[in-house]
Length: 286
Figure: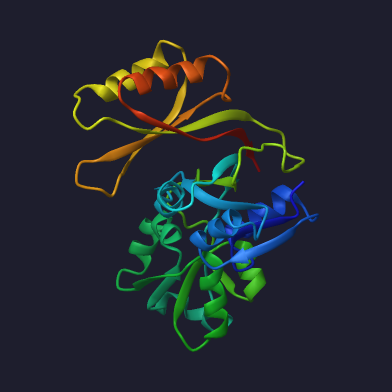
């Protein structure tokens, strides 16, 4: 069983919260300042597994996570955790009574994007500055009482760093959830234990189409359709090798089996596609 779990810090980041909630107290939690540093630590054995955000219901894919897994550190997804997200506006206690006069909003770029409408309507002239995490922004505001900063972060971050929440639940849409993936160098799904019940099973593939064939994407989707494999997500990302070149990430709602998914992969490879298994895993909701 895992002993060392890495995630994005500092304390009270949503990544810290999801690890503490999902794994309980019987692990050593190691916090990193960036997502790539956390993924690198899992790749070189500094930690047993990494837990990093990969998608938000409002803002979409965390491109840094996905691109780093594809282009830099090809770890395997061995689990998925979905965490409800509540974003609040908080300030240093000295600004509690005149918080509407703040001139800077400081937080992670995804958190600010999740709250765009409220921030635009309330602070039309405020500048946005981005931090490595929501809790890093909260920590900074707590140490700089003379700066007129508003922070978008969690209630846990407000408590951890002694900030005052002046507006609750400022995200644009009420259904705000973030997907986190559990990463390990190999496909070992028995590395961790949790009290949470597995809600569904998934397999994630990376597919690169041949560059000189038309209609290939339709044929790719057909390979899954006639096998009645349900795709819960399909997304394109740039190959970073030239304009118009993309790979596709596809989520299938079942574990990797001996017949259906291997058969689909063989069909895709016969079409000239390159297919890579990114993980086959259980999904949990907190």
